Length: 326
Image 1 (cartoon, rainbow, N blue to C red):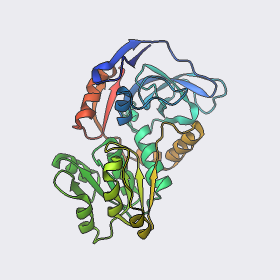
Image 2: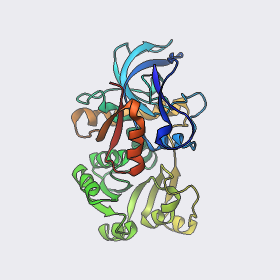
Image 3: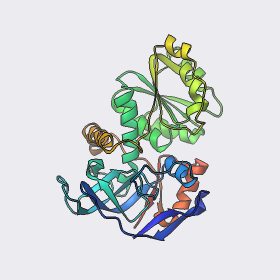
Image 4: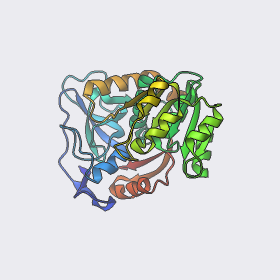
């Protein structure tokens, strides 16, 4: 088969479409013939040499795929050859085939195109596990999503609106904010021109956000604490703004607030399977009904993965960038 390999840490041009050995499914795994993968920020970090795959994972980038099962490993039940699926991965999605633990498989939702299903696993599992399973967003609460037009952001808006929460977003252009509004966002903040703490305070009569989904990390830490409501929960899922910041514990305690930080990739298989099971129970019916949809910016041939990485590097996209094998 062919897969995207990384010749050395660096820019997008180090991504090479290379002939490699076919994977084989271990016990408890299935082999998926890949229709598409998707570009995630973690892939850019891996390309740059900053985010190695967890032990035992494929060395190739790619944290999610869609495709068809072609082979079952020993002990797998509930799935069959030919099933159309999408899957959460520890790596290996930028390839024509990938071996996947059965617990990380999801059926392609009714009404969703097989290729576009590749836009779902990573963002849905990230949003559901952080915003709902950990932070416990409830109806009528306010969720602030940083990077509202990203793949994560566009899914967070939709899922929060599906449970009747109020949604505030930050984004860097009027066009991105307009797309967020179309998806249901109630409070639109241009972070290049406005202070999100002040704007959120105005929109909530000084109360702030009950839950904040943050992809920036250190750069926004202090301001996120300022933006939290009493008993608010800050869920950090990214480090685009740095890894070390100063935390005002007095402010956190005065608000009786909580800060969590998680990643999916390095979690044990059992934890990933639990997240996938919760997503299948709670989110898949919303996708099948059309209440929630994958948001795809563009499709790029997988052999040209460098183009997809440049799009994310430039941050010109809205939603997900897909890499297709067909």
